[in-house]
Length: 145
Image (tube, rainbow, N blue to C red; front, side, top):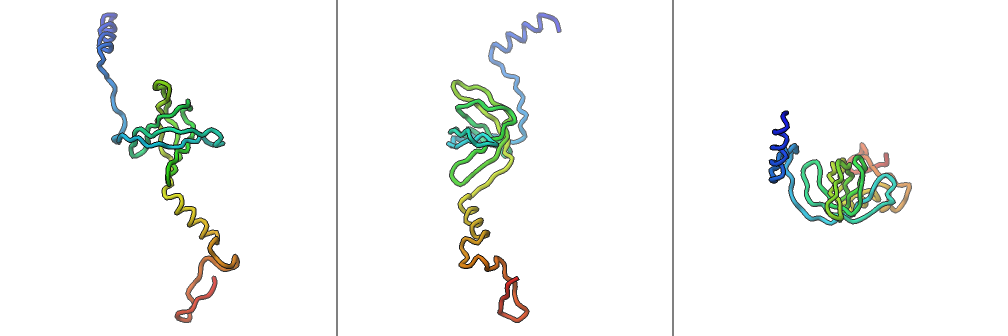
């Protein structure tokens, strides 16, 4: 490429023309959801942040702390917990924009906790009582499995 072409491109970029090509396959939707973020696997580092946009596979977070690409984060609010992997972390003023892929999602956590207690027998009067009963061959009677 001749030197003159490089200078022309430099002037072109200085004018604010953006050649950024969008590579995302899904649209992003803006939001402003406060969240609690925990850096995994040890969970000793927890801080507040915000979800600034979401798509079908990921989201962008704004957080006060630097994280590394390929770190795993637990993102939680209300009855929701997401396990995510960091794709990038870029400074934005005194905060960081973090792109993450959502790997796993759990919703309605209190309902899940109730179901777990039921499964473990928390509401049974006797711990020896079976969780599952089968119909007896005699109509209308039950027998333990």
